[in-house]
Image (tube, rainbow, N blue to C red; front, side):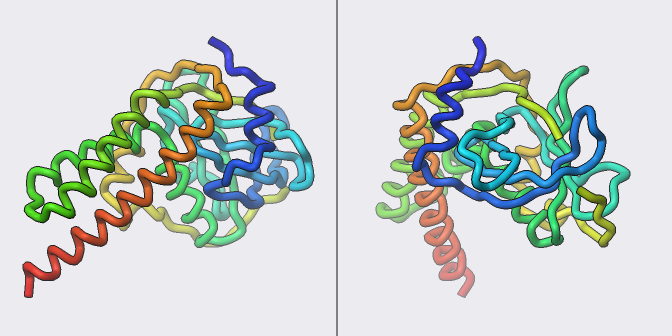
Length: 232
């Protein structure tokens, strides 16, 4: 099933909140130079525009079944979005600073359906270890939301295409000292298949993505307080 380009363009320009947006350098597929593009991340979709003021994106990357890694043999703060399988496109992007590169790599690694499934699995494991009624209720609510999320939004696919200067500064891999869960999901890849978007599902995706994320954050705080209390 092909992605509905009109629906996606409408979603990209809608008032739906963006998880992150900003300028990145993007290496072209035909023209191997880097060109400046404006990127917007919404849900598991990474849109890119020729200019920030443009109304419609010139391309889109579906962040499913991919890995986010430092770019090979390229100087500067560059990283790549890899899709498995022969003939699959690799997107090479560049940031202005180490901090900006790290921020993009981490949020892109968390944007996909696979990451949500992994978090859900860890929440289930923690549920059996909790003894506080409030913590158990919070975790069950998060798991319920994740069930809806994973049922309705298993959108997977490869993506769209196209497109300065080379950067030459030292960089380091943000995942070397990062969250193990993020590292694991970066290694998990699945064969991708396309699915059309309708407006109702798009709204539900964003609402669940934000609500589920807030519950995970709240649960993490409860978990840290509980561990701190037990260690004193």
